[in-house]
Image 1: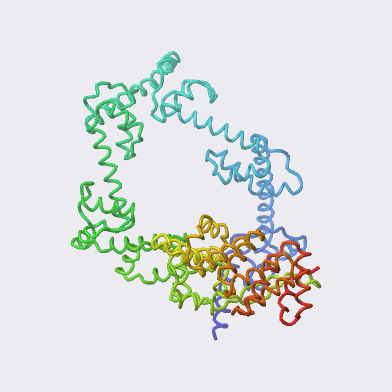
Image 2 (image 1 turned 30 degrees about the vertical axis):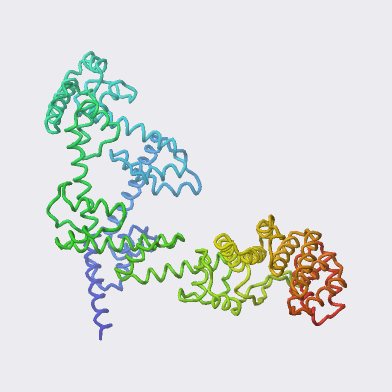
Length: 627
């Protein structure tokens, strides 16, 4: 049903259109009014400006539609004449505006170029985009000419405005053009320029300048009174005071040099007015920013102005300011300020900075625990990166690792339970290797204790400092032995040696203490590869306490460092007889292998170990350098 209605409507529209065309092209005597008629097709083509074929003209004549044929011919002739006229006009415009001869694909720009040139020629200025189009299409000479014509038009307009049309010259290099531009921008013209106008008999132009000067003088006097600068006697328009007062009146802020000049002239009242106006403008801007436009007092003396100024500088409101705002129901300012301060704290966290106690307290009071949690998680992530434990998966700030890392960062000692937890907890660490068939880097993972690397160093550094302080406090030399041991573990053997450099062993009564100090000192010598000194310390320690396994273990390690493996085995066995754990011997041997700088020496000790017990020392294979 709907399709039928649409079809009928379309038919009626075509019927009306056909009737209109028959009237327009004098074919009303043709009886067939059906839109399916050939005449309807012919008249539509004519109306669209499409040329008819000979066959179509013959058909019209056969139907005795001679008036129609005559009308169509006249229309087509008119069209051809108009096209020729347009081409001639365009040709003249191209010649006038120095457009080069267009050829090939370049002819396509005529569609855009003609209306641009016609627009300018008719007295309308071109837009920046139109000028840019001309430049981009290689019409630089045309642009230069248009610019010159624009200036000449401007010159003519100025001559008309300032009654100087009797001056015949039209060159923009004329002295008159410069003078008229000055008048247009309300600048003062010089005495020679005024004399030149009079010499050219441009009396009306000169009079306009005098009127301008009078208006400026009157304005200067008004401004001096308005801004309390009357005591400044100079009324010449060339005075520095005039542009300063104009600046104030135009609601512009004064520069430092302008304020200094006013101070030198003793115009303190003018400065005060200018500054008050500046503060009033600033206050209005701040009230809009902080949604306080309904607050009636707009003077800079208002306490609200001081609050908003402080808010711009520090983002945080004081308690008195909050009370002031609450009493005046300006709670929206409090909300904006709180959100702004919260954003500032977030930015601080993002930059890796820590929040202080007052900032954390503010967040708690304003129920922004989310930012506190964010800060702790961010800090935890930073500490994990610093201490090289990114492999620890727990990211929550409630993790025991976070507590431990915070303590290490603050140089605080760990509880024994915390250190034990570090020793028991393992993380996976990626170990990059190469697939020698594809030459691609691959990642394998191995487990390591948390108490290793930077955590290990930091922990033992803190312990070493603690025992040094305890020695200073108590004088107990066992603290020196403990401090020395921790400095060695913290990879600071020189620090360990410095502690025991000037000890007078003759004055120490306890042989066990002497042995412990000498063993620790010998270990530090071993760390820096002074093996002879290390051996001397180890042998003295054995003399003081033959039953302690520690100096024997040290001797075994020294022998392995010297590649005296059978001697080393002997000393290690002696240590085991005195209570040493065989695993500690293996740790010492592993350390020798790991720290060997000479690849050949390392291979030598590894081969010895594997030959002795390939199962026990299977770990040594991983230290063999691959080809």
